[in-house]
Image 1 (cartoon, rainbow, N blue to C red):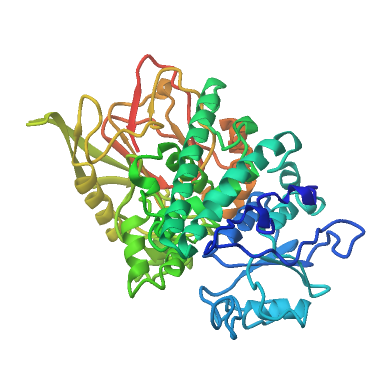
Image 2: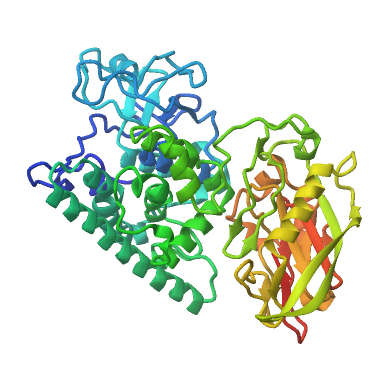
Length: 566
């Protein structure tokens, strides 16, 4: 278990707050208790509750650890406040903290606001800090901790006896790496996590600029750290890497602490907090952006992200429509907007029966990975959504002022739905597919496979000797597309797909990304109880499958480079 001395850089450490006149100083956390055997707060099931708010980056840390450790709701349940405050701000006579409402009720105390939770613990608490996250003991009706750093330690190590084997095994704060993690925290906490607030609330222009420079100096350091970590991973033959170079393929608390504030940077802090020297997405921080995207694509992490709500919350005081403008203009193209619920008038059978669905506004790309302009998407559920479609497209070489080009034309009527859905493929879905093909990849360079519209995905163009890709999923979006620019035969390592494995049960079989690299194709067949399907392709074949479906790429044992657009 982490000791109290490891709190350096936590919200309860006043030594890291700036001391200049007019500077923002974060208040100390008023509750700092541990969950340990033989104390007032022993590790017991169905006893503890975590109050969070999806706007808050400090809460997001706890959510990520809760998800990565696969902590059941029966061990630590979770609920969120509404996305607004009750009463005025800190220091006002009616300051009451975050609100609860009909859509976001308090399931434990039926509180109206977070002040009610604090008063339940201490009736004379007054109107001091009323922040979240709050780790609450339902049995004694006492607050265990409201220190986000400590809550992270508790979730990481103090409840292991109540978790499954994978949850017990995952340690985000291992003893050998603690010095490196703590050292990173002394950079990230004061200059990025808390640093963006120091910019926002600095009262003097000169001080605000000083704080802003501190933020961007720290971002440059993080960029350099990730560049070195990636190089070390490459030298050791690893694809995954994190802020701690010696963490191997695993994440650490350093990654978990940095991610929530960096994923909010352009939509929230660049806009609302005026940390606006440059965006993370400006091209100056390629390693931060790559690391952010890879973190976000982990199913456990992605399910905790409600960045749309954060964008609306941070920008609410900057005029009508400021949040929507920030979301439209600043959000990363690969960032899912699953947190923005909207109705979808289409037949829900395409998205899994009664599953809650929402409309996507436009097609998106991920580092040259084109995303379909399909009408809707759905969260992972227990209802299988088997969608595997093969279309035959025509690749016709043409000439233009830019040199050799390839035009892609879809023969709309020549497609096959292989055990995909009970009903015919929805017409709007096919319209979205063809519109996507015509608008997003109408032309690309036949020689290099690159153009302004679509570049070859580095993971989809496989060199000779490419090793087996780990069994994994892609994103929470509903479609992944693979376009064969030449025939992909058995020797070239075709993609393997396990139909129907886009459900909660199948995802739980792998328990996220922690053991996917250990599964062979044969083992995966046994684990999923589904025979895989090999995507051997003819030139021009376009494969579409549900992105949440388990899949992997085989080794390229041929004498040809495999080019597949994804």
